[in-house]
Length: 193
Image 1 (cartoon, rainbow, N blue to C red):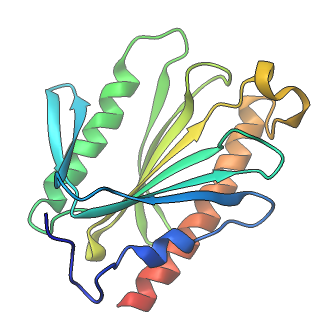
Image 2 (image 1 turned 60 degrees about the vertical axis):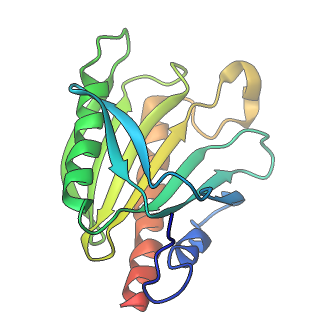
């Protein structure tokens, strides 16, 4: 396993400092362990591999909550695999949104968000499953893949401390997060080029 040497020994580290306005804070940053240079995902074709040259996980939470709101994976694909990795990761979202559930994930096709290709899926109801939404941002010139898992905040656990009480409030919080976070990621990417 060889860490990427473009620009610095740790080209992804600057992305881990991106914050969002308000009281949502970075609570934990961990670097992907050296070893396998891929991860497996499930699509309609079964298990498939996507390349991961290097990566970080960044966890966001509110100061008064013990549970995380967002789990963010910042990963760099191998240049030769990046295009196919994108296809596999988008197909993963499509696959999960096709699974028949009482409250399924609804797929959102490609949009542009502050220079990133953005794909996502969200439930139509909160308090179902571990995640209420999953969004992926792709930045082609850096072979960057940023996956954001928005985690449910159980009413049983959080009672009056939840930051959203219905799907409309979740969507507003999600959109604010995605907009401000992708703006910061774009500034970091532009500064590196």
